Length: 288
Image (cartoon, rainbow, N blue to C red; front, side):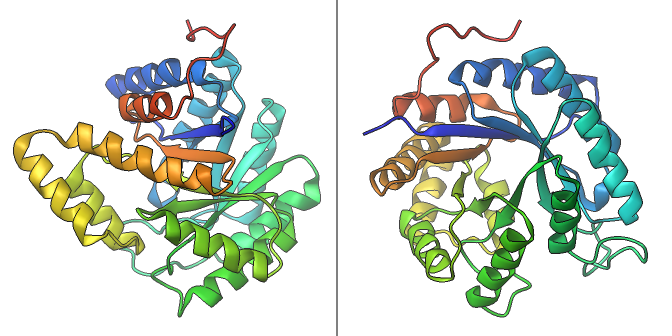
């Protein structure tokens, strides 16, 4: 079985302590030779400037390929494209283009009067510039705002047709969930890589809340196992085992890349990679 490529998602720091934690995470995972790493936006675009600083710093100091998240929230189209151009000028030409979530408590997404209406429009504008490799989000289970999965897949197809070259999925717990989605996308004429998003369970209660908010179903057996592990203080061991088995099943079905949501805590992602045989590449050292 061939070694899959991996990529890692970080979120931008909000204070000095978090900055050190982010750098520790980059340092720990860089030796695994990721295909790229990405840095998120906060809801409502609240970390726009911090995200830019984090992306530029990781690119400058680590040499890793960095993908910056870019959203349609709370900015004009001109402002959004200016941010994208600033990334390109800094040598960052990978973008994860998303609609984005509105600020907490703001209700449903409302586009800026002079902004992009949705992620498809953002992708099209970025593609027109010719400066970027564009990845987009995908939902292997129904998005909470979609009528059904067919609507999700149609929306993904529009983003791909607009210029995206790959998609990264929301997290999930069953390999079959991703594989059925991948097959449905192929049936819809989507031929670009669809990269499964893997969330190692760092915090079980937080994961349950996150899953409920984004429509990711948790199998009852896994929920019971984590409830027991939490009571016994062994969630890390279970999280490693569950995610490793999930990844192993995906790799056996031909999946060639895995995208880990690290939450800026590298240990579980690194342990899972090691369990899959993804170890530091010869000649690569930790970032100094």
